[in-house]
Length: 365
Image 1 (cartoon, rainbow, N blue to C red):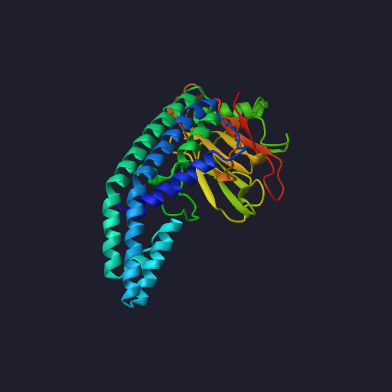
Image 2: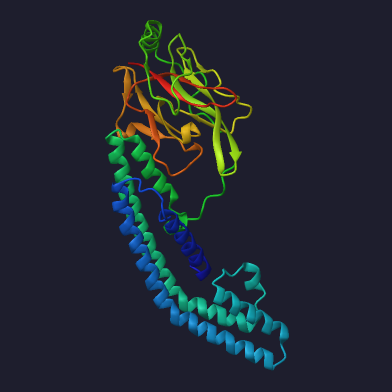
C-alpha cells in the first residue's frame, strides 16, 4: 500500500474522529459511548505510534531533498531545483502528492521519493492492519448492540447505532469509498400486482368500518386528515420529494402506497409531490411497521417488518425487521419513533398543505 493511500486513510480517520468528538455534541447512548470511547483511544494510540516511527524516516527524506536541491542549484538545473523545492514544501505542509506532481518529478527526485516510500511501507502497512483490526472489532460490537436494541423493540436506539456504523469511513476497513449516490428512484421490490390476503383484508376493513383504529403519535403537532383505505389495506411504501435548503435536504412531501386484496395502489399525496427523489417499498412479505423521524418529520426513516397474517400482527424478531436509509434531514438528534410496536399499519394521517407538515400512522388495534 502506498504512502499516499495511507495519508488518505488517516485524513478520513481524523475527520471521523473529530465528527464524533465535536464540542457540545449530544451523548446519544451510554451503551454506544462505552464502545466508541475505547475504539477512539485505540486509534489515537495507533496514530501516535505511527508518528513516532515515521519521524526519522521523514527527517531522512527531508535531508535528502535539501541536499538534492542544493546539488541541482549548483549545476544550474533551475527547473529541477524548483520541483525539488516544491516537494520539500509539500512534505512540510503535509499535503497529499498528486499523480501529476509525481509524474513531473525529475529522475533523481523520483529515486529519492521511491526510497522514502519503501522505507515508510513497513510502518504504513503495520498501522493500516492495526486500524482495520480495531475497526472490524468495533463494527462487530456495534452490530451486536444494534441486534440487542432491535430485539428489545427499541428501534430508535437501533437506528442511532446503525448511523454510527454507516459513519465509519470505508478506508478504515481497507475498501474504496463508494461512488456518490445519484438521484434515482429506487425500484420497488414488491411486485406491482402484489395482493393482500383476503381474510386479513376483511379484518382490516371491519376495523376501519367500526372506527376502532389506533392512532400513533405524530412527528409534530397532533391532528390532520387521514388516508385509510376502506376496503382494508396495509401500508407498504412511500414516494418522497426531497428539497434542498441551506443546511442540506429536507423531506417536503410524500405519497403513501397500500397493498389491497387486488393490487398495490397509491394513496393521497401528503404535500405536493412534484418530483419523486426517493422511493422505498417493502420486500415481498413485508410491510411498513413504523417510522423514525427527526426535525418534526423533515427527516424520515421507514421501518419494515414481516407480515404474520395468522396472528394479525408483525413478526418483530430482529431478523424479520429492517429499515430504509434516511430520507431528507439526517441530523444527530435522537429520532422519534412512530409505530414499530408490531401493530399493522393501515393508514397515515397528519397536517398537510404544500408540504407534508407532520406525519403519523393509523394502526390496527
